[in-house]
Image: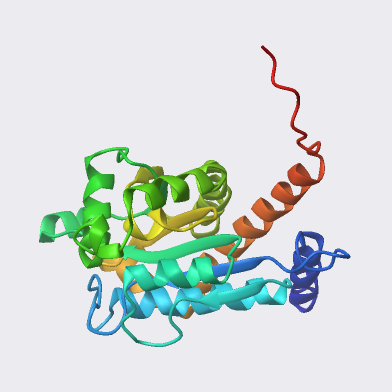
Length: 269
């Protein structure tokens, strides 16, 4: 295909996937993109001066551009290199009445040998139990900035139970969102596939909409870390994430449109 036609094809492809912007009587989907860390919380370190907080923000901005071009109403939890607490990120998402939440991070390993050997992309959704020791370790690292207890968030036991009921369907859809985004990330980047996993991430636990956390690669790996700092590779990641979101929203709107209204019936003895 001539290169001059590719931008047009890309635009047409996005229009065909529009599930949320152009239909009469429907508001655009509200999507919150969460660039991990920020400010003094630099996150993981990569080659040279590369830092997770910078990579996460750059990719988040690229994802926003793509989703806004498709008609989405997109917010970032931080627009610049600023420190935003995990509690503030959750509150911002819920205050916006978000339909989707995507948190973007880069992974790392602690020892030189592990840094040289470990690479690849992982996509997470919330679970009380981690899907393995590695998933638990990732959650522990990302939760290091979280309040030390539920009391620190000001949650009562009753409020937590009520919120949990509200999140039930959102949690079920979170796994669908993860499986929509992850294969596209692997196809688009040809990175090592570390799978869709589950773990108890604080930033996912309070969000009242489908939510995933994407570890876009190991910034500590010599080659993959260098890629994460490059604009062309970040565009591949952003394109895959945006395409996964669009496909998920299209399928979800189709599903919700065919649901029969739920009407309460008589209580049988």
